[in-house]
Length: 327
Ligand code: ATP
Image 1 (cartoon, rainbow, N blue to C red):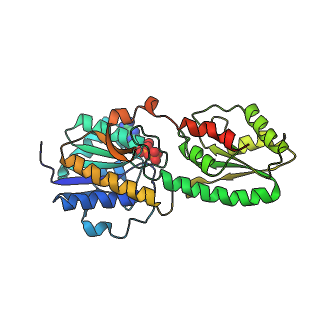
Image 2: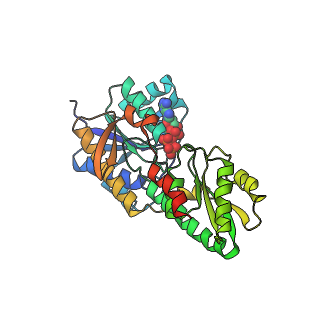
Image 3: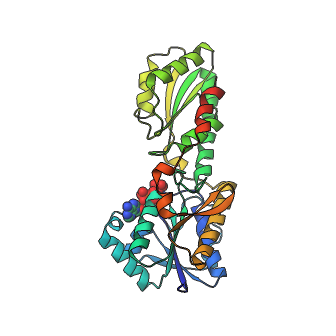
């Protein structure tokens, strides 16, 4: 096992609340163990441009409560080529970086896997994405905060909806993942939830909402994940509007506000645990793994397995509950 003298840490892909708490944990755990840390700004883009920052324990002071990422983040097409990966590796070597901690979603983990397969550099990935769509961790950093942000909005929408007998279609983030929509649907008391992973027929939706109207529900909230196959909240609202005269139909797209804000206590603890574990696992000689949380225990999953989309499962019991609990 080669001794690790300097760890590079970066955030990549979409930003997620809790990334800063994770950077803090990585930096301080490494320094506590006598290892230097180089922050890499803007993910793989910064690796290609040698945008490095020598960090110390004070570099990460007063950031645990901040959303976003002090290391910035980016999506980088050049890193998806073999030439890009080679260039990034050369730059890492010139900076003296001998191990990496990558914080990001599935795309970030795919890039890390390719880099670790091509070159002999130990890498640990930490799931930092509001999407919660990686196999091997019950939760990803940022998911809890983003869901809480959605709930706060839904609670407010519910007040106005109930006062006017309104039906709201609320579109939430999730191009390929319905996790935010599902949890927000349960905790916001939604009448229906539409997800990319589950086909919901428009007739089925209309029939459910008609029963609600007959039962004199004073408001109706339908959560739509942005990747739902029926075409998004506006299109759904249009198709449903003509069927109902009881409700005034409205649409709210929550958009990027779901990414921002101070991380929840859950996300701060998760980020701290995973950042701490990632560095310790590297120092123990582990590589090519994702550090996650399973059943309240930190667990390692090989990157190839974490990225196996067919292994990832939505919480099906929650899906079944939506219609029962909204009668
Ligand atoms: P989020 O879940 O928030 O979208 P993410 O990490 O999945 O985060 P992506 O934009 O998919 O975000 O990926 C981040 C970056 O990882 C990409 O911009 C690209 O630089 C790199 N990446 C993604 N896929 C690959 C791949 N197959 N090979 C090499 N690099 C990749």
